[in-house]
Structures are given as structure tokens and as C-alpha cells.
Length: 633
Image 1 (cartoon, rainbow, N blue to C red):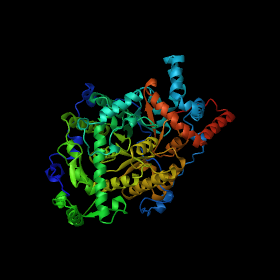
Image 2 (cartoon, helix red, strand yellow):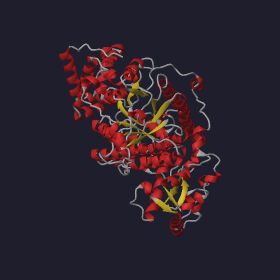
Image 3 (cartoon, helix red, strand yellow):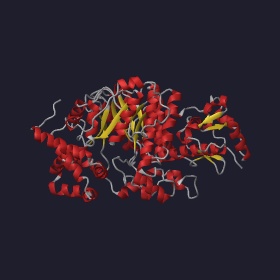
Image 4 (tube, rainbow, N blue to C red):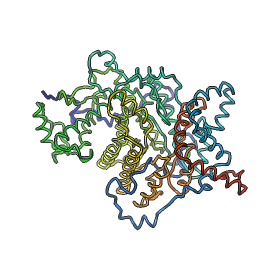
């Protein structure tokens, strides 16, 4: 018998508190005593703020060459031709004019070392041994002359100012990222993950629950650092530690806002609260979407793209009634505009969980087999409810600081079992803070099979509600981990099957957003890519659509210490381009440097052009008597 329980939280009109308002209802009272003082103190006069000009740009990988995501509005052909801008990425003198010859030599040596498998595989052991032999101080100096100096800006806000200012002088801004990680063993990481991802109800329950394996914690994958390159990992300790992370993010925001307009700062949501909530809310969102897809398939619409699927309410009522469902399903949409058309799409469907009186009321899911709406867990403790609220409140505190300091906030993407919740919570912040201009940027991982659906639905929602869509497009940092976890636990691999499929997906997403920018100039995108062909594709599409770099709608981003031959020519040509700038004490950013070496191994084996350009510039300086060249700014 298909029965829908009467769950008060599902009635939109009767909800006392909307989900959106939970983000901004109050500021968090931190358990760290410095929080209130930090919130009220004046801006730091720090020049480490991201911004080479009064603008910035975000997008990561290009779309399918020559094809837009939608029908492009190209009535701007003559304008585009008149304003067409091209960038030459082979002019080494321009590309490396911000570097002295020792910096070029360091880049060559570091990139070469990163191509040796033995050194990369044993890098942690080698660095530990080096520290023992040389001593802490000498080892730190050695690292600053080599790997640390190549990929990390400095130890603190004051230390990074010279590099930030130099990059700004040559047209390149900064996205500040405090890259310190806890150096804990695999066993400690696994234990922390299991303790923080399992609820009290699950620990007490011995019977079968309604949870899916994908959205449960599994000890063998508890150490989320495994198989990950270039992404920081946070493990939950307690609420005070989350407050400390928030304080660190606030300092980054203030530093980003201290030197110029339109800076950027990056945050990770797993740093701001107990990951149990992200796991559970992700499962809820996926199950709601799956139920919509199930109903759409019953109406013969399963082959239609997600954004184009529309449910006929009468057919839905008749179908569920035949299954023995009880209740008036029109009541789910009482007082809504969709009622007049008699149809709803996935965005209308998702809005059913917008309003809740309690955070735990969000965690109610449709059970297709049983025909019930049921709580994901039977009960939540009072402390769990408070922990969920504190995560949302910390996010709100950071968003408010970003607005106050004129800084854009980029929310990093994470694993797929966390990401639905992270994206939804980011979207809720965008609804609040992106009304006048884009402040909150969501990150879309284009190696995911569902990336295009996610981008198109969020763009459409922003258009309907009138706020500014803002995205950073990336490939993704968790591919190996995601594939192994899906295979071992037994769910569908969420990653595209091969590199080319990911390229096509990236291109498709990027083209869709570029077309949206051309249509209404109300969206922003950051192309965060080291791929020269991707960058060239973006420039070509901008020319076709008449998008000028001075509009500050399309941004480019690369990591500090990599692909300077792309970043600096773009900046000097007037495009908003940013370096992702890590910083922190030498001994505390070792985990970051270790992954950077692993990432560069594949990068340097697959792309020789950067090393060739570095050699070319060194030879040019030697031949022209400029070997002692010093940047002037």
C-alpha cells in the first residue's frame, strides 16, 4: 500500500522558518573568544588581497570546440570582430617578465624533479630525512629556495605581500588559500571520519536502516586524503576546531580585501562543521531527485534532459493513486505558481524542501518501494541539531565578511557523497548574497557525469529568481578515490569514462555559461585551467559572443608556480586572471607540497611546453646579456 505520511515540514505555507533564512538569521557565537573581536575589528591594511585590477574571473575548462551549450545570441558579430583580442602564449619575454633568471631556473629544476616517479612516490620520506639531516631551520631555508618557494607564497599574511604585489603589478591577482593541514596518521584519520560521520541513532540502531551505502562512512575510505591531488582535507575534531577554521577563513577574507577591489578567498565546507550532516543531506537531495526521475519515467520523459522534464500533476496524482497512495498531491504545491500550468519541473520539485522549521526536518525522503515519506533517521539528538545549525551559521558569517570586505567567496568542491549538500548550501547563500552582484561562487567538477545537468539547473534557477549565477569550472581532484570507492562499495561510478568525455563535458558546461553571460550579463565564470587549448577556446568563444575582458564576467585561474606562460600573458592583455595562492608555515604545508609533487608528475610528463619555454627564455637572456635581469614594477 502506497501511503504518504503527514509530515508537517512538507507543507510550505505552514513552515515557521524558511531554509534560506536559517543561513542569515543570526551570526554564530563562536566558542573561540576571538570571534566577536574579529568580526568587529577594522580591515587589515594587507596587500595580499587577490586582484590585479578592479575585477576578476572564474572558469575552469572549455566547452566542446565550436559548439555552444545553447543557441548563442550572435547578433554581436560585427562588434566581436571589432573588439577581438588574441593572446600569444609563445612569447617568452612577455610571459616571464615578472621572473628573474634564478626563478626560471628553480622552475626548471622543480618541474624536472617532479617527473621522477621514485622521488615523487617517496617524497614524504625524503623530506622527513632531509629535515633530520639538515635540521629544522636549514631545511626550511632549502625548501623556500626550491619546492616551497615554487608553489607556496609565504608563511603568513605579511610574508606573502611582496609576491602578491609583484603579481598584481604584472596583471595577475590572487585567490588566497591557507593550506595548512593536520599531519595525522591514516589510522587517526579513519577513526576521526567514523566518529564524525555516524549519528547517535545509527550507533544505537542494530536493525536495518534506510541509508544507502554511498552516503555512509566506510572505514577503508575514512582517510579522504588517499588518491587526492591538490586539495586540502579537513577532519572533524569538535565545534571549537570548526570555529578556528572559520577564524582562519575570516583572516584570509580580510587579507584578500586589504589591497584592491574584487579579491577572492577559498573555503571548504567540511572545515565548518560535522560532515555527518553533509552526508545525510546529500542522500536526501539525491533521493528526492531520484523520485522525480522515477515519476518522469512513468510519464515517458526519462530520455529528456533533466531541465526539460516536466511532470503533469494530474498524471502524477492518478499514477500514485493507482499504486494505493493516500492524500492530495496537489497539496504539495498549494499556493504555488506551478498550479496554474498543471506541471512542475525539477526546480519546482526541489523547492519542496526549501522550508523547514528544524534542520533535521530537511532529512525526510520518499521511499519508492514502500511508498512512504520517511525520516532518514528515526531521531536526532539536540546536540546534532545544534551542530547542523552551527555549520550554516558559520557559512553565513563568512559570507557577511566577504560582502563587507569586497571579496568573492569560492566554495571548493569535495567528494560526491558530500557534494550534493555542499552545492545546495552554496546555492542558498547565492540566493541571499548574489542579488546585486556575484559574491558566492560554486564549484562544478566536470569529470562528473551529472555536471551539465547541475550547471543548467542552477543557471535556470538564478534566472527565475533574479540573482547572479557564479561558477568555477574544474575537472575535479578526487577521480582515483571516487572510482575505487564506487567499485568497492558497489554503486555506479560517478566519473566520466575517459579523459575525452571529461573534456566534452567541460566544454559543454563552459559554453552554456558563456552563452548565459552573453544573454543577460548577469552570470560570472572562472575558467580554472592549465590547458592552453581550453584557454584558447574560451578566448575564441568570448570573441564570437562579443564578451570583453573589461566586463569582468569571465575569469581565468591557475595554481601558483604553474603555467605562468598562460597566466601572465592573459593578465598583460587585460583579462582578469588569478593565481590560486597557498600559504602557511613550511612544516605545516608539507602535505600540500607532497600532493603538488604528485600532481606535477603527471602534468610534467604529459606537457613539455612549459619547460621548453623556460629554457628558451633562459637562452634568450644569456644570448642578449640579460641573464641578470630583475623585474621592474
